[in-house]
Structure formats: C-alpha cells, structure tokens
Image 1: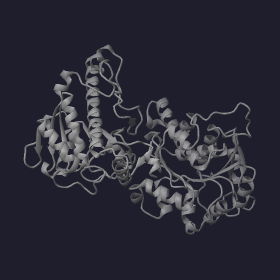
Image 2: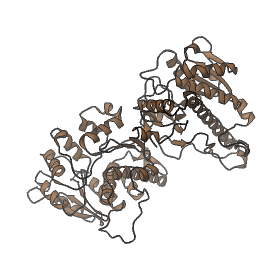
Image 3: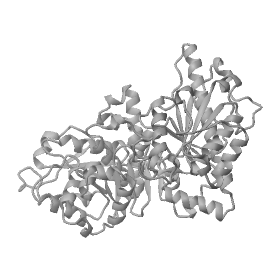
Image 4: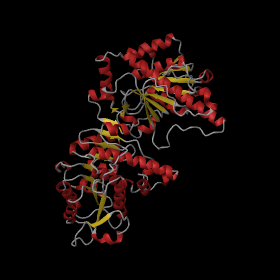
Length: 576
C-alpha cells in the first residue's frame, strides 16, 4: 500500500483530472459516497454491540487486539461490513441478499434513529462532506449540514454540491449565525480541513473541532482529521479525535505516524477512481505500508521464509555477534539467540576474554569466542578491533553493539569495523553512540556491503545532532534523508518503525504491540536482521522483514501472556 504526502496527492489529483479526463466532480462524488458508506458501517457496528449486549454476549471488537490503530484497505463499493457476528440475533442487521454489491443499507428503524451532523469547510474536503450528507440522507438517516463559514464562500465543485444539497432540502446551519446543538445528534462527520490545510485551526474551525471532541459522539473524518498535519502526523490544537478516518484514494503519511495515527482512530483507505498504479508511474511510490504483499512484491522476500530440504547449517549463514560487557552481557545473548531462532545456521558471540568462562553454557547453541586479546585486561579496547576483524573473516554477517558499553577510543574502534570489514554489518546500541561521537559521519566511506543501523529515537537524535522532539516531528523524512545521504539502511525504531533504504524508499511497519517497550527488545531485533542478512536477504529486505517478524512475534507473545505488559524480550524470541 502506497503512502503519500499532501503534495504528492495533489499531483495525483491533477494528473487524473487533466490527463485522464476524470472530472473533479466525479472524484468528489466517489469520495462522499465512500464516507457515507463508512458512516453506515459504523452505525451497524454500534447496533451489533447493542444486540450483543441485550443478548448477554460479548460484543465483537473493532480491532484485532493489537495496541496500534487498525488500517483497512477497501476498494470502492466493496459492501463489506467488518465485525458482523453469525448469531441469529443479528440477522436483521445483515445486508439483504437482493441489494447489489456496493449498496450498504441500514434497516429503516435503525436509520430513522440516527441523526448525523456534517461539519463542512470551504474547500474540497467540505464538498466531500456535502456529498456524504446526500448519500446518508438517501439511506434514510437524518442529516444536518453545519457550515464553518457562509456557504456562499464555497467555490468550484464544492459549490455545485452545496447547491445540490440545498435543492434536496437537506437542513443547513452556519456557525456563528445559527444555533448548533451538537449533543442532540448521534454522530459527526468531520469534513472541515483537508490535506491542504496548514497550521493550527482558527476561528469557526477551531470552535467546531472543540465542540465535536467535547460531544463524546462518534466522529468520522473525511480523508484526515481536521487539525492533523497530513505529512508528519503532528497534532495542532485543536485537532479532531476521530473514531474512523476514511482516507481517500491513497494513505497519507500523517495517518501512519504518531501521534497522528492515534488521533485518526481506525483508518479505512477507500478508492475514489484514482488508479493505484499511478503512484509508481508518477514517481510518488517511495513510501509503503509494510505488509506481506509489499514484502513479496517490492522487496522480493517471502514472509513465510520457506527452507529447502537439502540445506545444512552452513547453507543458512553464520552470524558474529559483537557485544556484551560485565554489566550488560544479556544484550549480546538476546541478539545471538534471536539470530538462531530466525533461522541462521550458526552464531558466534564475541565477548571480552574475562566473560568467556562466566558465560559458558548460557546458550549451548551459541559458540562463545573471545573478542579481545591478552593485552586488553579482559575488557573491550581499541586493540580488540583487530581481533574482531579476524573473527569476522570466517563469518557471513557482523552485528555490533548489543551490551557493548563504552570504552576509551571506541569511536576509532567502530570506525575500523566500518571501514575494514567488507561484509554485511548491523550496528545497534552503544555502537551507534560511538558513531555519533566519531568525526563527521559524511567522511565515512560508503560500505560496499549491506549496512543496517537500528537506532531508537534517542540514538537517532544523537546521530543527527538534533533534539529528539524535533526528530519525532517527521520520522519518515529524517530516516529517508539519513539513509540516502550515508548509503545505509536505517531502521528508526518506535511505534510505527520506519525502514529507510539507501535509494530513498521507505517502509512503515504496523505490526507489534506496546508491550514490546521493554529492555532487550531492540537487541532481539538486531539478531533477527543479522540472521536474515546471513540467509541471503539484501539490506532493505532483511531490515523490513526483520521489523515485520519482530512485531508479529511481539503480538504472539502478548497473546500467550494474556497481556502486553507481561512481555519480556525472551518471550519475543520464543514467539519467532
């Protein structure tokens, strides 16, 4: 699934209208119909819950138990109602068999009980809302339009829709002129501000947004919640807190990044007549939602990871984990065990000489080796880089950083590994901080082999030399810029992890759970990615598949533990 900026969406719209000849009015009609259908589906879900409650049953959940908002991708008019149970008590809520696919109807009694306000701005987003009001009215719901400004200020296609709604007698109010009783309604459609808006809402827009949020009513946003930055996911004050966001044509960046992802609620992507292949054809297919389909089609990896029956331990690669210190030996162990669980044939774990005997037997499947020589005093030092490089010559992939700690001249140490090891390299944890302290990163030579950096936001802020808060304002942009500049694959961890490839392509992950915010989870990810590299995946593919598998394992661990807060890093490994 493609993800676009507001400017990229504008280019798509212009191409479809001016090059393909699909009118803006037709696109608006399709958009409004899609919004109306999602409102009706929400009403059906609400009615289902009421029926389940009356029957003494547990109502079906909107989401799949994961801690992040859900994203659905539907084609225009698919007629699908999610969450419908098979109880006979719900038969009257089902779509009649004689209704054509694409028509979604509420039973007459339910429709009559619904009264929705449609908040209308003066742009095309407002026009989409007016079309939605028409279709809701046609479905039998009571609808009232609430204009943020004088309806006479609407222009173009939005003005055409305004006049059509007026001719049909749909009630209309104007903020500041008429009394708007939000509390007397059953739901709100937010069609105030679209992707072209910038900055904090003001005046009537701010007042209507605040009133909608204060109402406690379900809110369905058209394309993007009003007050949300479409590109970064930043929240302006005030900003609509939507239950459902009907994203039109193509997923917007702001809906897949926090805090915007939470503000948007359940995101449903609906086709409005813009062919999906245009994203690639017009050169805007640079950011994707990470799904099994994207993994297979864009990254050429099979998320099921089939293995040939004739393989042996040498077939699936040998990972060298470089990490561990007196107080943080567990990090290297977690990374090494995760690499094995992900399927590589062999793992060697290089630790300081003083830890070899104490750690012997902690993981029988892992080969423990000394990463330092007799001059080190049992600790990492600059001279140990020579020993690590020697060990790497007979291994396929090096993963440096988990539990490494800091030591004198460590920036020169990591620089030697960067410049002298010619195989795939994964850098995490303290090794990232060593890079941050080294001389200007731009002076580091581009490595010929795959290089994957896996920073959390704090580590990434140090790599960039900017505050974490500033980084978090545009995670996708920061990751893509860094990966392109330095020729690396960058995994910016956190909710909705961003995987950015050297060619400027990025992938946004949606697997995982809040329970993975636990010590050692990042070390597990390092081992997973290193294992996939050892098994022959390219850098971006190993990083993307690794992040996706890591999240799926976290979800599985949460189910097995019955609560995400109970997860520890070892649980993620066992769920791989």
